[in-house]
Length: 430
Image (cartoon, rainbow, N blue to C red; front, side, top):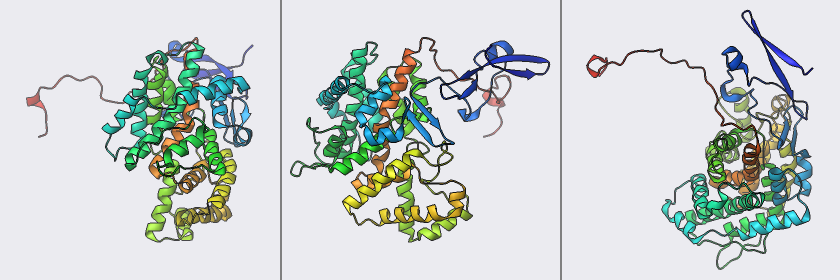
């Protein structure tokens, strides 16, 4: 007999099934609790609520484990590429040579933007945030190939996925160029995914940018490490919107908006802003670290993680890339020097070591992107590019679930009880 849990309320008891995942995670299934008892569970912010059963990503925060479809993140980061990892996250298996070739060809064919879509950029002021532009342009993009809005057939879905992953990169580069007042640089079919993004961002008509292989590899790893991360805010948003049968573009655009929040996608940006603040105040790293230890309102950005209670496995991977890129570029940048000094001081301080506050992926990714020359306001856009495969995979999982229903959380109401309408003359106040 399957294991069950018993909930006792007053003199009534209710049996609830226990569900176990493939990695032995256990959950109490409360799907029928309200119907049986009239009760709901309350978990403000869903911190202890499983909203779905998923096959895409497994995280063990206590042991610092992250796997996509069963594959350890360190193996993917070292041996895979972003397009290959994207296929894995979306379709469930590592691609064959033919599948990866076709998927790459589809991305190459779809990397340019329709001329009508390019005109939309003129409607944004130069001060517009690139995340707002990205979300708007993804929705606008849906109008140009409506057959791909609800891609039920596998071949159509494959094209829709490739089109989204490819075009968000081009949208990001064009938004960067137009905000800077520079001419738009078109993609090159001979370049790989990440190299092409760097080309479109940093080439000039009179001075082509030739991406350094180590720089390309470092940014490619950032995309791989961000490809999915289980039921975070933006991924849950994509699933929530997708559960209404909203199309892929609308669902992913909603994910971009959720990622835009500073508590989610803005963490790597906050690392650089923290360092900039130290530089402007002329404060030493040692003084800042002491303030962090003594004042709970002073935050050390880029250290620790809500999910990982030990090392962030992604940080250990990206640190090696960070060291290689900084050594390769040999830039004289006071902020990068401060970041390395902060890392050194914090890792040697028992206060942080005892609390397991180690540098996370946001700390190193922010440093790498600054070294490459990506402006701070584009950091979250880079995150969105990397997260695209996970969002698409989760949207597909929702749509392929034969038992799928529209997501509809409950609430505990704590407002006024029933009262009668008061005419204007009888209301107090001015």
